[in-house]
View 1 (cartoon, rainbow, N blue to C red):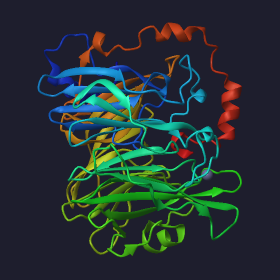
View 2 (cartoon, helix red, strand yellow; view 1 turned 180 degrees about the vertical axis):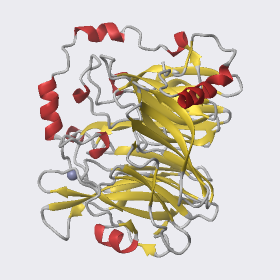
View 3 (cartoon, protein in one colour; view 1 turned 45 degrees about the horizontal axis):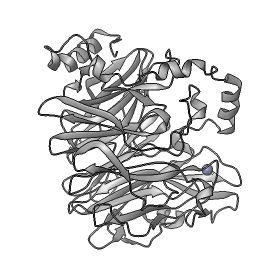
Length: 489
Ligand code: ZN
């Protein structure tokens, strides 16, 4: 349980967050499922959930790296599921206890189409070469899996699913954007990390998709034959019919790989015209290359400071606000209509802040949910600005724990105030890779009777016979990967 608050203020913050459940049974827990697996969610594969007609649907990586989905009915405060919605081509049996044995790139992204059918895309880290050549990218650094699209058999019903074989196998970092008329855009990287970032448009609720359109170009660097231009990008709704793209650059060392990534960029798509433009409105030719990105879409040249993908949202005027993790900071950026405001580090100086996501209430008021790790433990808290991001003040603490650490999703699509974000938590003391899954909002975590939240069955028995994780092998693997995390390949 999440109970190990370490200070009085945190204790009351957590208590306050659960006070809504003052009459609940003592056996209620702050998670809805205990079968998240490995790294069950990320802000990159998104949305992880959508609020649609009074129900919040959430998806995550469960046992065997398969996609699982649960639903929360707000009117009755009842949970449904989780149920397994498909099969990942990357899972190993039995479930592993060595984190090095998991790929973790096939996490599901979820969208509800205009008829109420629920779609998930999941299951790939660039596509296994056995499925055929990749026209828009390379097989590199162990690409594998099979990008898979499943849809609920009935609208609004998570109990039964079918596979729809209508997308390429090669994608990873799958992201859905639904524009106001209901058209679906599926964005992803078309292969290993030396691959184009693309989108495919569906005007018929995911029955068919137009061919992939390359947005960001991978190629040998014009500056050096020993560098490949590579990207990490995040796509979401802008104002009206626009889609935003925020991204960073990875100068991938050739022929190997390196961990560096740098800079921050922004551009947008007008889905009415199909035209991409930069923040000033200048038209961009696709695919955007490193050269055109530097010239037309660069926000900040961060040099040796390492950036990772962030999130972006627009205000009522359509002006973008963005955050990117940069070095030890989470940096906030804002376009004021004429220029990019000087970036500001959000959070307490000297403390490690993790990626999160945010709401733009007005051009000058933004609320951000961030994870923070201190000597006292881990917590998720609001950070607020009312002066356009120049200063940030810590708000309410959502979740706090001395031993459990948290992974955050991006915001739930069309989020109900009670369910804005999905979290996964783990304790290093647990000798397995199962995680508790939390759906959090205005009243903290949405609770559930402990018996209903238990979904491991006999899995803990099954993994008992596995040998303990081999630390030497894990260390060798870590070094081979150059210390890279899940979202680094
Ligand atoms: Zn690389």
